[in-house]
Image (tube, rainbow, N blue to C red):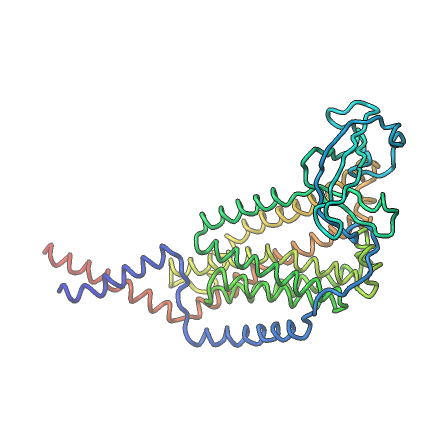
Length: 445
């Protein structure tokens, strides 16, 4: 009797162990072939697209000296002395803001009429060790202090004494420290899964910086580049974080369908609303340096890439929910699984859409404040291209997110309900329990 009971107990223990760690139940060989028949051609097309469009690097251009297109070096503030603004010809208030220009409001601890004369040393580049003077007005938004690291702009065509100027402060250390805290928190809480998520994040940034951005700069179609790059990121990130399983494959297919919907809707409404994608100084500079870039296509590419991260979360969650429902009750058919899964998805939709809208609103908050100051009507604000871009970006992405819930839930329900391997495994695992109860009944009699 002992030898007969051992295998069932072992099976039951393994079944309980699988629930505690949440692995996906195995699916039949037939379903694996069907999923592979869909994903292998797709993955092959992505690899071919990467190979065909892979750039050799961003094309070179002559620097304009405007905005981000300036030559920069690192510097350090050596000393700071207070001087009369009139003595350094800084009595007049410039129009624009910056380190040496005001943007309203007196600087903390500054007396009216007293400026700061900062001596800055260049610490990198061919002029390493060279010093220059930077005048900081009392109402400048950024004040310099002795020993502070700064970023200095270099203008080779300017007079010798005006070639260098402070353009920003050096924030590398606090940013690196914050990134380290984030990585530590992810690994401590997520353990191996968290570590793989960090690796996938690094790969995503690599695809973005080594493929997507240089390929767009070289003149490739931004939409095609975004679709291929986003697909590569999706495949790598999902399989690396969640394993090479049928459950992950269903999430991949659901994400792909939703991305295609976002691309179609975005292309339609960006063209219909006549959005050019050239709305501020940065996009204007890009268009000026690389006039061959399709700026409206670049806008659509941003919509697709921006929606991908949230889409991954929704599709993986819905697929996992359906899989867990099936494991809890293997007798549930596709219709019941879909209904149960969609109830979970409705809660997810509400929170995700709200998150997406607030994220875009937060990014555009200074712009919205400007319209509020101008006392513009809601219609006038929404009609402006700057705000219309964010509205289209938000609504198209949200439609894709909403659609991903029923699509992914239906796919997952069809896959697990059509599978017979998992059902047989569940029945086999439950049979020893019934046998055990029968033995206990006989013992009582």
